Each structure stands twice: as C-alpha cells, then as structure tokens.
Image (cartoon, rainbow, N blue to C red):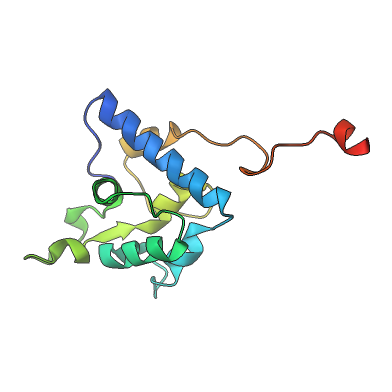
Length: 151
C-alpha cells in the first residue's frame, strides 16, 4: 500500500494538507488535469512512476513553479511506494530518482475524479480527507446565480 510516511505533529500535518490544497487550487485555476500529464510516463498504466518522471510530469503541467524542493520531498515521502513491495530497490546517490511514486493517488488527492487508485494506508486516507476542496464554481470566476443572469 501507499503511505508509509506521514507528517509528525499538528503543524507539519496542517502544512502538508495546505500544500496539497494549494496544488489542487493551482491546477484547477489553470484548468489542468494533472493525471493526464503523469499518465504519459506510465507505460503500463500501473499508477506509479519514478520520482524523476514524477518531477518531469509536474514541470510539464506548468502550474507548480512555486513549489520548492522541500515540498516535493514531502510529496515523495507521502506518496512513495511501500519498500516491502519492491525488495530490490536502487541504491546509491541516485536512488531517490528511481523510487516509485503513486501519481494516481497524488492526482486523486489534489483533483478528485473517482478514478481507481492503488490501496492507501488508512492514516493517509484520513490526512487526504482534510484537504480543503472548492465547493462550486471556477477558481477564476465566481458562481453566478440564475437571477443575476436574467438581468
């Protein structure tokens, strides 16, 4: 399952939830479906890509330019594949680039679409349920009621 690491403490947890909410809002503001950019790196449609491919997909979206390296590390730790799932993993200075990230879980967290995702730890699911969601309307334009449209 996905989600072996979780932020410790209320402040770190709140920061992580705010980061994911911020990223979802940024993608929605530019009308970008992040999962479409990530899928191009997932040849076998497993829901996982390497960390290097994940970063390339994020850069291709062109809406997360103000996310810093430490925040990318947080996302990697949050959505990386459990190490027990792959006993033979890369080692050395470039090992991080070959860690597998569950992009489908990340995309479902920031832009819920109902697509199937690999199983997640219950604690991760609880954390993701705290992400603030936009209830209606476009992030750029407010909701216009029917009465205002008739005028």
